[in-house]
Image 1 (cartoon, rainbow, N blue to C red):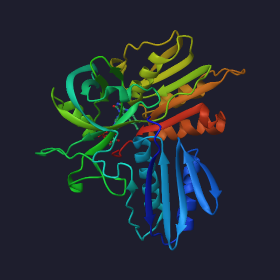
Image 2: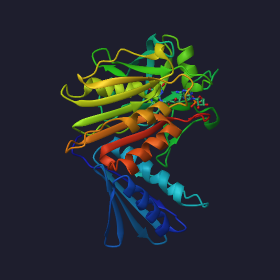
Image 3: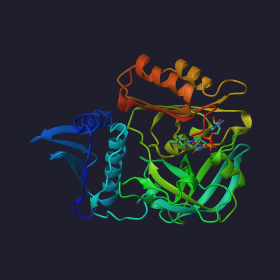
Image 4: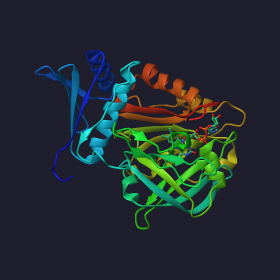
Length: 355
Ligand SMILES: Cc1cc2nc3c(=O)[nH]c(=O)nc-3n(C[C@H](O)[C@H](O)[C@H](O)COP(=O)(O)OP(=O)(O)OC[C@H]3O[C@@H](n4cnc5c(N)ncnc54)[C@H](O)[C@@H]3O)c2cc1C
């Protein structure tokens, strides 16, 4: 950061500004934004950025301040997308002025080139990519990225650009790539390369098909990184199916050596078991699904696990199929009464539904 404050301004014609701004603030409060009122303006603060909403005659003026252009880009995008979401049927025109208003590509976009591929297990393919900027993915607070998988047979790839509204746009929206979320399994800063482990699953969508057909030299676009990290805890509990193994494995490899806890990993059959490195006091328990419903063994294992009952702090990290996710989240919040900073439970895929 260079000490400069980056700013953006927009004047928007909203039919019902009060309701839209109230809805936006209510939503952003759930993401830990601080909301206040100053001289009739509404001020929203989050992650070092601020957005001020003021009446300007019949129009609404928005001023955003951020510590760098990337924060400004995300703040503009967040404000614009939620205004469009809450504005109702009359879609307002949003056009930002200010710093880097004409940036062509999203600042978190880069292209990766495939340099290697190998099968870790029969249904897990590891693909190594060379990056323009691998250091962006080194932070353990943000493990995943969005892979932009081009539609088959395109002569020219479609890459995203930033529209005047601050949102991502495509030259040919009908040809825009499919986006799929994947985890950066490991990173090699010396060679500027990273690994992603792809589950090769039945009913393959663009993500799984990309991994099946991959060849050295292929280019793919990514937006990222994204996601939340682990909180410090005395005792960790991990639970995940094949799609979550890359994230859990990377976290286990990077936890302090004196960390303790348990990790439950559910895979389709014994051939999918991997040899993972872990701090000594975190035991890995492999659960073999066979014909069981995805995630059901994780739910059962978590129900039966013996959590420390004393003063030790606990952190639960779980990612799996949607219906098991719902049960685990309920277990964490309603039965175990874990607070927001004591758990992260996420659906990584949904049976029968494309991402
Ligand atoms: C934050 C995050 C990180 C993720 N990291 C990884 C990762 O590192 N590696 C990884 O492989 N996946 C990961 N996933 C899961 C991955 O994004 C989904 O599995 C995604 O649906 C795969 O896209 P697709 O195009 O292959 O299938 P889609 O087009 O999304 O779906 C097509 C069909 O396949 C089914 N399907 C999708 N995934 C699976 C699966 N795993 N097993 C069985 N059936 C499936 C769907 O239900 C649907 O019927 C992650 C997801 C999230 C949210």
